[in-house]
Length: 407
View 1 (tube, rainbow, N blue to C red):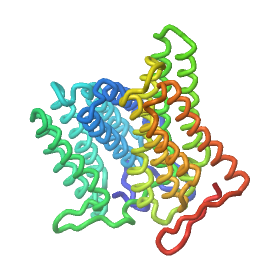
View 2: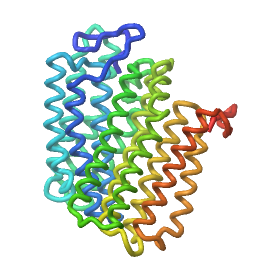
View 3: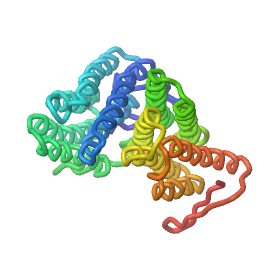
């Protein structure tokens, strides 16, 4: 990958103690993924079966991966330059095709999803390769390694798009396994070996800000779904309460992620001696369950708003508990990666949600929503108060030593 001290004409300038700001072109690009997240949540709501959930999970992993790869590229390339802007605009077009294909990706529009995805991944990498001066052979070789892996996965994407039924599912699973293993394998290819971690130089503040922006996208989609659903209902005491619970739940998620975690992550990666390694773990991989949890939580909010009374069915229980659970698992792992200790408040929240799952079906959807929101509020308040007071430490032995948290 492109090193921090070796830049081509299209790369961002490297200045000491300089934070590369997120550009308007990058924010414009992100608008496509607001639509993509909406498509994913609606598709999950419409096919909430074991097979449907697996299919939507694969689609979500693809959407996240194409976005985060673009984030890595724009961490190096300068979106203020016209060629890079044109690249982002072309990727937006591909993203729109990708997003509109999501509801029918396992039916009639599979080939369109596959072509859009493969074109975005391979085309963007070719652009990066062409942008690297020939004199920087080691960096060019890293781009070649990435291109080899993405081109290999593209064969399975296209093959899956042409296939039917379960064959498409299996071929796309293979494609995702290839892509998700590639950074962990440091893009090893025969003869040329793997890239070194030093080549994964990123501007940490920019990477942290970009991923925080995607969390905002997911939370924003959740609020839009809640508002749109509530607007179409006849307002009763039950669905008004469900609306308030959903809104407060979104605020609690925002607070848990942004109050301390986002800032700490930005500071930690900016000062890290190996920012690429931290970016790969904390932002490329560990943000996935955070975003997934917000999306699943939005599905639960819509279900509860439409049917707040009666017993909770399996769909409501799985989404109402699964969303916050995924979110807290993601945040505890993310904060562990950047701070070196496990969050006691988050761990207690995870245990509380697991206990709630045992008798959740006996609760009404509205009561289930209220309880899960209350758990998120407790986690947010606990972490905030304890970090301010510096009281109540929790340590966990990891490797050679113990790590502490003032929470």
